[in-house]
Image 1 (cartoon, rainbow, N blue to C red):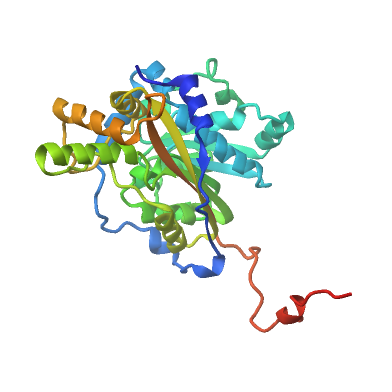
Image 2 (cartoon, rainbow, N blue to C red):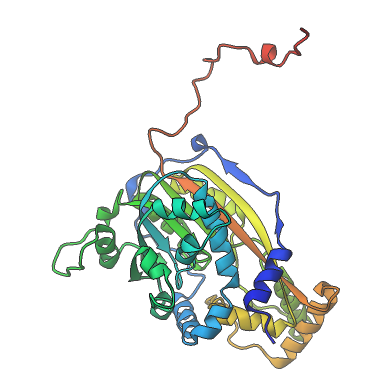
Length: 379
């Protein structure tokens, strides 16, 4: 039986640990890129985006089952919203990339511990544009009667693939107009059109991640905010190692059963190369216990997070499942017999360059010697 819903969410909270691994990149340690740097180039294809869309469509076919495994997305969305509270600014046009059914939007409307925070937060939000590659997932929670956040926010839903972000439908949504196929369209029209871009646990499946970040920066207005979370680093290392050891033992080789993930330094470099200022990245380890390995894999499937690597094996033999379960328990089982699964979450914040950003003073402009300032005060 899969451990889901409130019980899994409670377990995730109780076993949460915050890593000390924090990376901060100053504004002057980045490269400057021209506005044409987001244009399409040949990119290595690691993930099959068509398969990923089908996986998310399949997950949305059973809304009740899909909602029971929202515990990770809901938890991380809530933590992103906590970061929103610390940023005192108005988000006139907020673009949510890979929104899913609306975890961020629901978190924006959920009551906070301090009721005043809820009012302040919603007063800062203007129009919200939700984008998602899966039509079923995008409209899963679109009923305004059952899900009040649809009425509490000014929402527009646009189905698109994150790798093809600049579309006519998205431009019409940003402008607040109806889509007109007869009008000319240019991707350059997206420049300086959005105040804030947010993404929650979605961009780890993007092949052209540098291109996506460049497009995000291009679409943001000067001093615009990009804030996102993604699964990265050593996520699910318990499952990964169990499958690799079991497959090596049985077949003498190991296939790509889990997808490759970016780590904190990768994302720092990518944000820097995309041209963002004042970059901050931090890491959470979210640990959830499962009764067995198949319960974990079932939850991943219902989340739409199954493997989508191009050269992935297309089936999992029973013999391999049994051996991997044994290895998993021998190496990682908790005292209560449950199997822990670690989700390493990368949080990132970046700002589009602006004239009002803080800059270091010119070298030699100091009026007080550091040597004198550090002398002990003997008076």
